[in-house]
Image 1: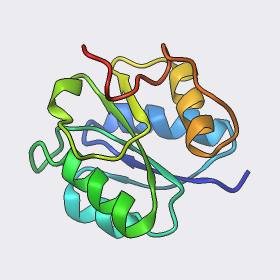
Image 2: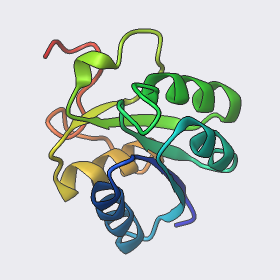
Image 3: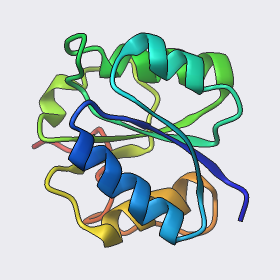
Image 4: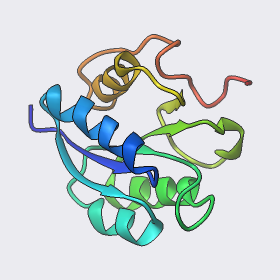
Amino acid sequence: MSQTALIVEDEIFVALDLERILTDAGYHVAGIAADSRTAIECAPGCTFAFVDVNLRDGATGPEIARRIAEDHGVKIVFVTANPAQIGTGVEALGYIRKPFSERAILAAAALATGAAQAEPEDVIPLNIAM
């Protein structure tokens, strides 16, 4: 499987856990980005991205997601403890609430790459009220 992921997360242990889950499943991880600049630099060539809302440079996750989706066609899944901060106008497959399970991450990756459908408990559509 040659699908490439980008991890946009400033908590290093969370980012490394995501990286481990994805690489163990055969995905390539292009990079871990903790801020807007790094995320935008790493986005070209990525198939999908797991994006947190609150990063090193503030609540920039939704704007990063919008830009990399529009500019590079990256499919977005938010991984956040604060889904209410995602806002509107962001084209995303949905979100996974922290703390996440390995199953949810793998389901979201499969959904993003077109390999499978995710169950609603794994990847929550953005239009569902919290």
